[in-house]
Length: 485
Image (cartoon, rainbow, N blue to C red; front, side, top):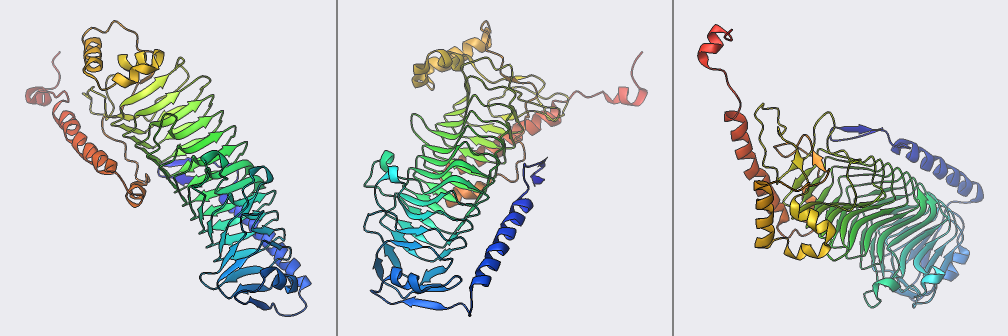
């Protein structure tokens, strides 16, 4: 069970359960290592210009191999559980051939190293670090000139913490590998990493029960890419300047909260893409300054709640097969278009018993003072209906012709604008205290945060004025004498 803001929900497997499983595995490997060690763990130093592979042949389980510094030009295989670390500036370079570090011993730790120059062949899964063992830890490492940065292949319980992974700009995007690639791998932790200039930041393929937290992923194709991977969660990450912040495909039971999806720009760019997804819960995320904020296709029974969707060209696009989705208590502010549909929207719920969403384009009123508009908000206007049928019309979205067409429809509403409407729009922005506005500032905001904050502050005054002075009031005489008969 987990709580985010005011939202309480059950997760398929609690974080405590996953950590308990990791502890059990760690104890198992510790006992295995201790049983194989006949003396105290040794520290083996690899001198400058020496061979890491030669020293590894002398190491016993539980030993530490320490690089004295400098550059080591070799490819190594770690087949006993050791700690591989080194002095600041220690580098292992593979000469662009094969895997630089290949880990096949469970319980291995790589700490504080610079690992570079993996081979260029994607079909052979080449990586700076290839992991084919359980419970491997890679922390505080710098990985550059990679194909795949870290590839975890059929290994469980990996902990990838505090690493910086940079791909190769000399390769076209299609020829680059992923920053972190998980295949047939479960119960991993991916925390506090920075990933850039790769194909995808973190790629999941048949990888379940994994937590992704506090990572900064930028200048890649998809910041986070899920394929056939269930029961995962990602919290407090910053995805910016990518083609898509997160592309979630063919998976179920994904939970993500307090993430920022910013500045994903291009013809096919999205903050969040849900393709053939079910039972996703998106809570307290900031989706700002993207070509499309949220794109959903063949996505069922998902919940999008307490998010800020601000300054996007298009807030939401719903394509075929989107049934049973709930979008409530979100703030949709200053988006050029709110909604693009290619099918009827009868199955999407835009409100529940506790209310709907806040829309900066809502022009209704609240005479009874309950905080919700007295009139529903039709999410699509006449120009957006036209855009659904003729996508090229988007080029004229901000033209005088578009404004005249919208004004004419308001004056003489003869067109049916579709089924999409919020029956209980909130006049004031919804308080989403967990939305990570500070992440935008850290990531180099282009001013959207300032603009959105000014809008939030400016919109509060007129709405408060209407609430205070627009409510129906009884006269003083009627208050004293009671209602007339």
